[in-house]
Length: 302
Image (cartoon, rainbow, N blue to C red):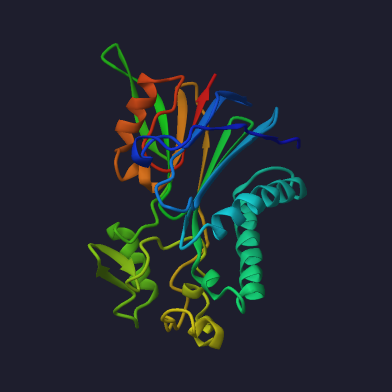
């Protein structure tokens, strides 16, 4: 499958650093067109995003890094090639192909962490949320780890009036959500402090809000806190079992004529906008992406 890399334009820092830093011009994909915008929220840009498109398929990725940029950059480089490899081996996209690609990316990053740990022990605490969308043969696949989110804009009719409704297509793996918090607690019945309220929000071991990611090896591999090298870096967390996972949630949906566009964005956008507000903005600005936080990608259908 031939893949084309999107072309980005640097806009520079504006308005004290709150303006768009990168965006792409409107470009075609197999089912319509797309655009991307990026804002650097921190001193170091930890997020990555990508769109690969061919005549038959489109792939979108939004990777929200934390603890450093290494994990999101790694995912940006390795996940799509794994998706392509396994799709070719198994006769096309499927939930199993996507899970294999996520697992392979996680295992490859773990090998990197083990290799460089003696000289860069902090890499064991680097991770990335991961949101992927794929469209092939008018079937949409959405897979995610963490609290980035995919939202669909769908045309609906109400008493002869045409409106656009927002439909969330992904699950927020954030322990601020009661259901997620209970899920994590149920997996650790012998650890009353697996989720604690710290610095104004719920956090796993008082450290991190998301329960699924690529990386964050020190919260997934109990033997890491016993490693003498890692013990020299910060305060190792004693674990009996992994506190996080890299198992993605996957949604498969046949695209319908009333489906108009998709928004893929990291949590910085969704902390400021409801799903409905984001959809309304796209409806009012169908040929421009304008946002103030993190990494959104928008796909419009023909």
